[in-house]
Picture 1 (cartoon, rainbow, N blue to C red):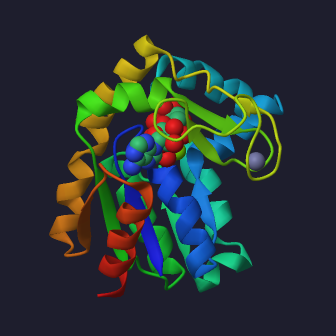
Picture 2 (cartoon, rainbow, N blue to C red):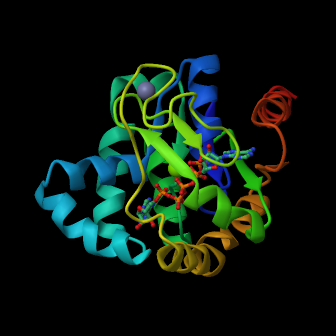
Picture 3 (cartoon, protein in one colour):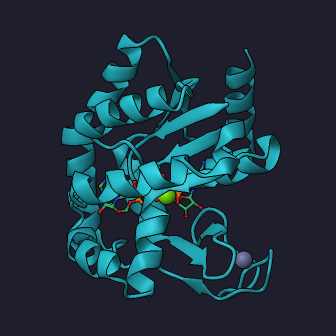
Length: 214
Ligand code: AP5
Ligand code: MG
Ligand code: ZN
């Protein structure tokens, strides 16, 4: 299974990817997670990426495409992968097609998780993430049983720097302008599937797996 996950900021790409990797035992490749780790580790890449991420803008293609290419060439991707947050514009999508063609691993499906914009602000301002294992919680919808630690592993929960109202607005605008057109791009290739991303997380996951397996 070679999957691209599409969806607006807060649609639940990461939440569903975490469940998919458990079920299908394939790696999740989240460019957002890779970039955030680089920012935390203060690598040259992280220093370059941070200013874009803090503004809610896309990090330049030249930076992100290199990261993904390198990751897709690793052995564990041979059995499949879930790309979460990549591609985000047409140029990234075209480059990805070329890379996967060379590797002889074409995409199985592009799955768009659809959520109305008015719900997303609350999801994002309420999001908390485990520093240790990456599990996502939401103070409004799915809180951890202890306010500041993870139910799964006891790790400390944190709030992302870009989950501020002003930055969220910009991320949503960038999504509309640059990423949403990819739904048509993959429809044109006959591999788009769309799932309603509002409702119970497990119910959405069940819809996704039945779509993937049909
Ligand atoms: P990235 O990390 O990809 O962020 P994003 O696209 O803005 O998406 P999010 O991670 O915010 O949302 P999600 O869909 O994963 O939602 P989640 O599952 O967490 O990118 C961040 C930045 O990095 C970008 O702005 C850019 O600067 C840079 N970047 C990354 N990739 C790039 C690329 N390819 N090119 C250039 N730049 C790039 O869920 C959100 C919340 O909702 C959680 O609290 C969760 O618990 C809750 N939730 C989930 N599902 C439900 C549900 N069904 N009901 C109620 N609550 C729910
Ligand atoms: Mg995410
Ligand atoms: Zn944890």
